[in-house]
Length: 435
Image 1 (spheres, rainbow, N blue to C red):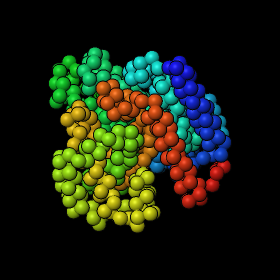
Image 2: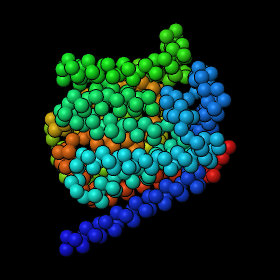
Image 3: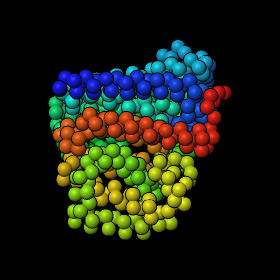
Image 4: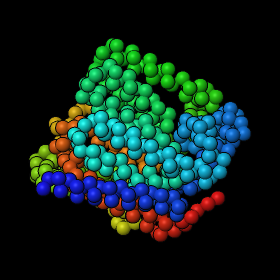
């Protein structure tokens, strides 16, 4: 009986994987743009930059800011050096679409190392292929953007961050974490919240002199290429040269304004866990701690955000929903944000303080930018689910359950479907875009 059940599960699993692969390559064929801007990011920034790198690398690097590319030139440099197919748009985008499948194997490797599912190889294989349904993973692959490249390093970084929090083989873990976090930051700077969290843990929670010296030394050594690049850009003379439109894009005033955006996105990716643990969720809603914290947080957010207005760009699904269908009803947005913070406060005793430290820096660092995007959380949330969270919590919230994985496939497929409908049919971005 058990063998028959497992055989059926394996059959459905491999059907799901096959469908995901088919949809993934079909999306490339149709030139899908399910993140809304992949085509223009390639056309107006990355492609111009790569072509000029081929002509004169050093001079192009010095004038990098004129290309208005939002990330550090680590990804672009490696593409320039190692991608033999970069001469044509077709070769460049197809090679990235295929290469990004490597991320699935890396994710599989670290999930297996974490021993969440024991020897159940089918469930371990299932998780990485959910990436192929993520609109942002897909569009980044199809248009040769930088986001997926960071995931290559973020996956081991989250694995070792979890080991650090659990205090497993601390010294070796800390060295590997520092290296992978450095590479992650070179790839995509929004992950700086992990570096800040790491430093606070090392300096103020661990407080081991050997670990402090090792961490700071590795960060310093690995920062030298970046510091030299900043020197070429004249950042020592003008801080705004650190990135294009520095003063327009980043501001401390944005942090407060972005609280509803970030909390709504985080709650959005907590919904699968809530649905699968609905009994525990309703028990939490009945607790006095939750009720009192919700009333207090709602009151504070009402005073802060009752007149809040957001631009149409960025913000994620919930922000777009409240703008399109609710006529920018701030009561709805305040409710969603307050619900997230109240839940986080109520379950605080069940979660290590280090995770709340990371959450704090998410709001601080990501909140600095005037426009934030859901692609900074998807498919990242899957990595956080299975690699950053401890195994005992994973088991408690039942996300290692095979039915949860099937639900997660459905969840991500619906996100993809909505994204395609929104961008290709509502905003009428054409398929088969080329330039």
